Amino acid sequence: MSEIKVNNLTHTFSKGTPEALTVLEDINLSFPSGSFTSIVGTSGCGKSTLLKMMAGLFDPTDGEMTLDGAVIRGTDRKRGMVFQQDAVFPWMTVAKNISYGPRIHGASKAEQQAAETKWIEAVGLKGFEDRWPRELSGGMRKRVDIGRVYANDPDVLLMDEPFGALDAQTKERLQSDLLETWRQTQKTVIFVTHDLEEAIFLSDQIVVMSARPGRIRHIEEVALPRPRSNEMRLTSEFLDIKRKLWNMLDH
Amino acid sequence: MERIQKILRGRFVLGALSIAVVLAAYQWITMQPDNNPALLPPIPNIIASFFTNIEAGSLQTTLGASLYRIFLGFFIGTTLAVIIGCLVGWYKTIEYLVDPLIEAIRPIPPLAYIPIIIIWFGIEEFSRVLLITIACFMVCVVNVIAGMKNVPQVYVDAASTMGASRFQVFRTVAVPAATPFIITGYRIALAAAWTTLVAAELIAAPSGLGYMLQEGRRYFLTDQVMMIIVIIGACAFIMDRTFRAIQKRLMVWSEARE
Ligand SMILES: Nc1ncnc2c1ncn2[C@@H]1O[C@H](COP(=O)(O)OP(=O)(O)OP(=O)(O)O)[C@@H](O)[C@H]1O
Ligand SMILES: [Mg+2]
Image (tube, rainbow over all chains, first blue to last red; front, side):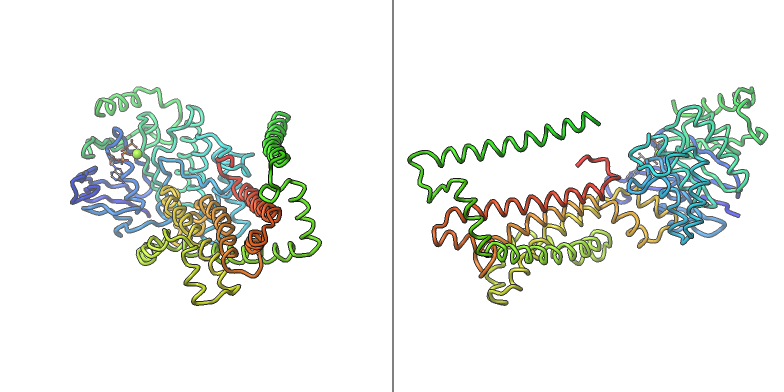
């Protein structure tokens, strides 16, 4: 069980100063346990801010978020996050980055090794175990980021544009892999993206946000059957949803 | 590979060349008929002074005394700087408590403490080591604090969201992320150690490189003075190079080339 709820959340940066900036207003959302939700919206509408608050990196100025009824305060390994920026530790090799989570939680050498093998394979970085991050491309580093969070096995997976920097093929492969991992582990996934096709392909529900301040414009329930296959991307149901959502975004 | 070797060789050759030109120019000036060798000793005299002092054993004793002071002061000063700097840079409460103090003391040149240290502790070995310790600590701690404050937030956030405790983030993220700054702190501290050492020995020491400089001035042994200057330069250079090598080893992960 890992259900996240966002209740009457409003967030203002630098509240009470002349630079006060309300980035999120009246957000009410529910992410059922084991569901896959995407959040789309124009740049600057507060998607990353919302995700970071769910991760517990800072508190909203008003309202609250709960995980299984308990108010979210501070970070916890149950809520893992893939950041929009590159967050790979440059002073650790690829393998050491991947096993960072298990290591700080006291996993044995053998367990760390197992996690490294499993997740390096999963994100397609075999052969790069002992490389330094500076020797990888931007997209490869992103995959280290993703593998590192997977290896830490959180119940809730917060992903902030994780596949933004990848080429189409790698992206499609990682999307399918993500769905597979998700199906097996029943994690609650909250996924921010600018790519409508990606959102539709992956999600149970899609939250469309409007900007300044960020509000919820629409929630789309995606009724496409699972498991999803790449051929579905071209079906009329799929494209109808895409057209509908596209018209909803601020252009 | 071949190209890199070529560049390295080119670099070494050019460096040696510029030193050779300066030495040759110096030697040429000393060979002019109106040169007073007591003011500008020719290079052979300087070298002779080196061997005379080696034979007498005085250079070894001197160098030993000075290096001992440098190492001890440097070691204590930088160790304290790393410990205190990490704590100040990472824990807000400690920062608020200690940082104003460091900021207040920082602009005072360490040599300004010489009189008070002599009054309190006398012209003793302890006083000289203490002075070098203070100098090393002050320049190093500032770098360590800066390093801890420049740890990119996203690394801290990434570690925290993976469930790392505040102390684990400190140990596994903040300290490694700050190492480039910390190593720079060490290198600046080493330079400060030499400056302070010579000054301290000029004023208050019965031995050491600074003392030999002073002795050279008193008895007008210009070749000895020149010889000691070269020795100090060479020692400081070797130590800095050693540090750079260590830095390179520790920083293999870093994007920076040097
Ligand atoms: N720490 C902060 N302090 C002040 N303002 C901030 C801070 N972080 C973000 N903002 C502001 O909040 C707004 C929303 O930022 P956020 O990063 O959440 O947007 P986003 O929806 O993720 O955009 P993008 O799609 O470009 O990533 C922006 O206007 C930004 O300037
Ligand atoms: Mg963002």
